[in-house]
Length: 395
Image (cartoon, rainbow, N blue to C red):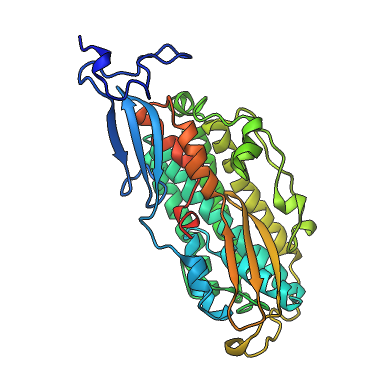
């Protein structure tokens, strides 16, 4: 048997954990093993990497590494005119770029004192809920795939493509839409659009029922997800946790309800919470919020005004000087609080734009804590359960 004193890292990683009593020393090799997960790995949500120190199949330390993706958006925007920033902000969050469009537009409008027409507010809300639906579908497939249920991922990616068809019809783009712009939106809804949206929602609802049976009631998924990556209510404020990750721990916070924006105050919905704070509870929250988004879209299609302008005329955007000032605007995206802090010095270029994405805290500090004592096989499922997008970290 190898003497534990040979281990050069003995002072950093004691051979026996004081709490669990488990061995932390690899007696076969005489050292702790270090493995990398990512950046090109299906168990990583985007192009980031986890540096895992393991003993056997147990993770005893996790370090996150970013920098593998397009980045530096904030500095790039400081060197561009306001209207030229739109091709940039979309890419800060690829699966749901519309939140960046909305927040950038809302910040500029608040600084410039621009009032958006009522019809445009409804169109913007519709767009954000469609983006939420598409993002949740992508996430559900990723969470299922991380636990070996790749068939569910095929179902959800197919359904997401139907939602992208609706975005393409609305804006001309499937991924980056650039539909929400300062002053309103770019175009009216196409003829018959509401009917095609409803047809898509019906298809998605049927698939969600199958997913509920195949995943949420699956004994293997429950055995692996229940108790994995527990977030206690006390950790929520300590780590800056928002969105479904907080609501999965029983915390009733949702910016759509707490600080209503757009037309959310005219829609009927409740804040969805679950108890437990583990990967299973977070999955339950997101499954229920996916169904909730379908209901909100239907409400908007019924209540949306048929007449009125969808755009407020702006000054020449190539020479648009936004008045001096600063503001912070926020919205509830699929991962939690998303915010833009914008500062203008009265010139044609933004003085400072700071993007607050929930992935920064969820994917770095939180992941590094929750991964300790997790089995290597469950690391991917834990990572996906936090629902993060690395470009928000590298912005």
